[in-house]
Image (cartoon, rainbow, N blue to C red; front, side):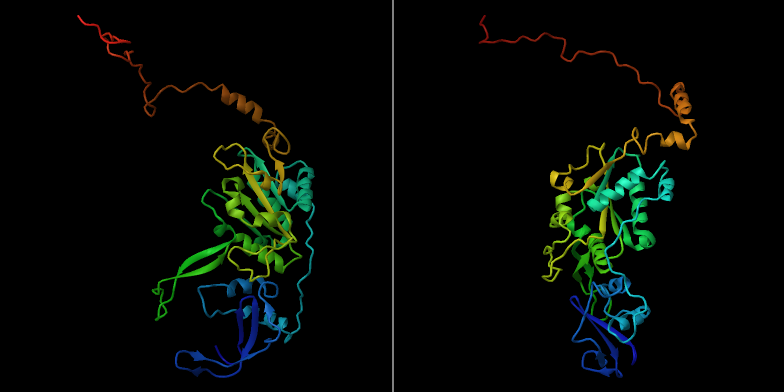
Length: 358
């Protein structure tokens, strides 16, 4: 660090920007440098004002000093020292219609079914694809999510998978241990605990900061997890997107948290596996559903269409194959054991009353 470098520091959600104004001065315990702070009276908002890449760097709990030269011009533009050449667009985000290119990529005959999915998301920003395994639920969900996010799909689409051990702390935010730094700077200082954001919290923060872009969270096997345990107070926000709730760990600093309207959720649900958890009525009311079955469009006839009509004859030919004779690599047929009585052969005498004398 040298004179003239830009310094950024955060205090909760308040972010301050300054410029190093002098040489380093050695104090009793550390090295200090004078800083000319430029926005002490008007701090920036950590979530709304900082670029997404810079906010993720600043939130790295394992580092004390970070280098982020690539964001220097952007930060100076935020405090008025440099004109901003490309202002961030403001919302609301608009979902694009289904296109013939998307339908062709998913091997669908037209866009009707996909357009129905888009219309459902416009009405309710949560949609679940359900059906037996092998019907393309996850494949369609990911393809549709990338289409909705457009050019920002690489950063605005995030897939997760639920399972019985998944919890609120994994999905939204929770306290996680890390190795603390010792006196000599190594990692031998014991354990420290940080409040770490999960995939939903990260995506929601980005969607709040960029309201004109579409963000999509794809939840695979959504009914394998304990939904009430995973969503917690977010149950309410799934239905009331413009309302705010106070978070379990208090990371909202009393301001409340909401799910932005430009954040959409796509889920997949296997309806055949009996080991999955039952989705209660409260969660069903907050989602729209689209079914995928092998005997109904858009899945019906897909295999035959891709194979040029040859699958029917091929399947019949497979059914007529004879059973292979037993060979060396197959176990010999099991011999039937001779029948043996369950009870011993000597007779048993049961008495209902006292034994007669004599």
